[in-house]
Image (cartoon, rainbow, N blue to C red; front, side, top):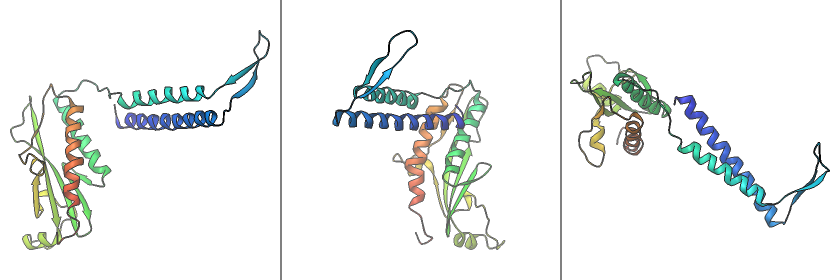
Amino acid sequence: MNRNGNRFQRQGFIILIICSVIMLGIGIVMHFYNIDSSSIVTNRYGKPYDGTISWQMPIFGAAVLLILAVLIKIDKPSLPKMDIQEKRKFIFGKIADFLKENDYKKRGNHFFKRNGEIGYCVNIQNDKWNNADEIRFTLNLGIYTERFWHEHYKHTGVAPSFPKEYECFVRKRIGRIMPTNEDRWYSITSDTDVMKLWTDIKHALTDYVMPFFAKYNVEAE
């Protein structure tokens, strides 16, 4: 499912939840105040008759809408069959989208976000031994300061507007900030479940990379 499909899925889930809450509220109010909704129902072939809606009806409707919302939420995106390069493009695109949503700018496989006097760098590093059967990659992280850059690159005198991870004072591989503290390489093969792989990477980005960067807010740190 593409990004637009995911957006429509989220919007549908939210709308159904809101409608369910409204229906539930109506049912509770009707029950609390002992209110029934009555009207004269007419049809083409029969005599008019009184139609009454009790509090159970909106409660039932709320339950049905809630079930539909849950089904939409747990519906797994369907993806077309991909070869190994298409899987790589999909995963790298997901990483890029995640970082862009967190205000990172992109150049190739490099990402940068400025935060006052410091900056955060992310680099997707491909394994030099990649081949037609397996693509391995990892994420390199860096904390950039212009003061450090000027101290080590005096020959140019002009600090880069888009620093790279290798120009940073603090440099870490993603595996080194995770609880295992071991080098972490992700692998893509013909059998790789890209959604499962992306879930793993997104967990690492959300729970480890973003908090790691958040610890550095000023140059003195």
